[in-house]
Image 1 (cartoon, rainbow, N blue to C red):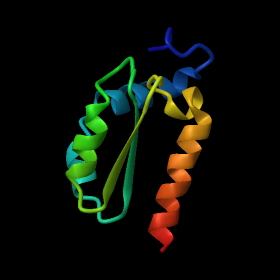
Image 2 (cartoon, helix red, strand yellow):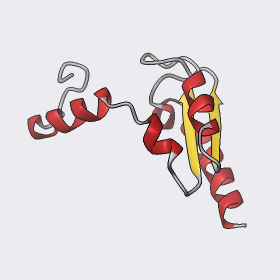
Image 3 (cartoon, rainbow, N blue to C red):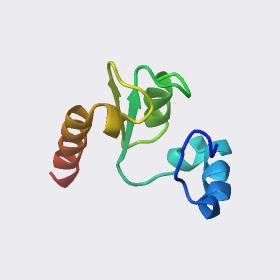
Image 4 (cartoon, helix red, strand yellow):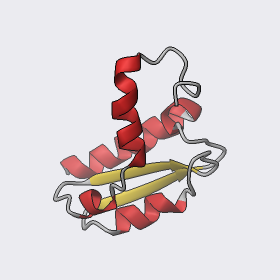
Length: 94
């Protein structure tokens, strides 16, 4: 994992590895707050369909899949990511 993220402080590696290996679906399914799942259509780590499946598991979930986008949607497509986030937040505060 350190090779994938040069400059990452060694103290954070165990936490990041633990997070990456967890299955968070049951946690999201229990959420009683609005949930936005953003996925890149070309993620290097898992299929983008996970966002739609996971969002559908909660009563207040929404999924957005960004085209021409890898795993780090906020970095790969910042304008589209921000637009999706702002639209979600606008719906939440209504």
